Image 1 (cartoon, helix red, strand yellow):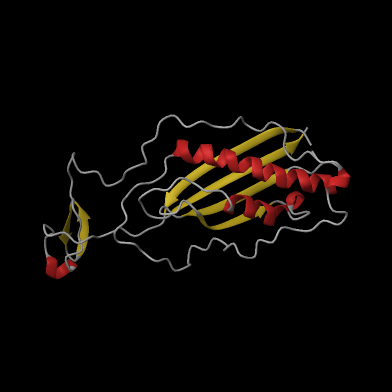
Image 2 (tube, rainbow, N blue to C red):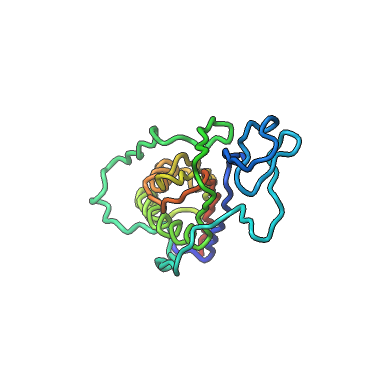
Length: 214
């Protein structure tokens, strides 16, 4: 299936409470328990960021120009000979991959920094993931007579900074892409990718791919 409409959107944000770290200069240790970090002060039992032009409360991983694979221009076309694939489709087993759940308890690491992967890094790595996703679509197309209906895939991905691994991923597909194991295959393609490590809180990345027929 050749596509004339391809859209990949990226939104990333971190899900983590403000990390209040112990610091001997923190004010009001009785109210905040000595947990306010450098550049913060205790105010009414809450750690508040001090306003200063020299104080940085958020950092992004510094990187040089990131190489990126070419944009995919043909999505979901069968690129396999039919006899290369099993006669009966067998869906990928994604049972070991947690679904993203904003309510899921998380273990906070008070020693972690404040780095985050920037948009350039995330875009380059998600482009790499797109090739794995397109392979999922290609296999499904082979079982669908060579083509798929257009549709949209929405992904929510949780990343762990210390390992660069995907902690959880949820994939939602429109009806035309809910065939021949596309969703579990896409979940595994995302979960198998290793992102750069960074010293900071867990990140949540929202990504979508929309394809349409000619």
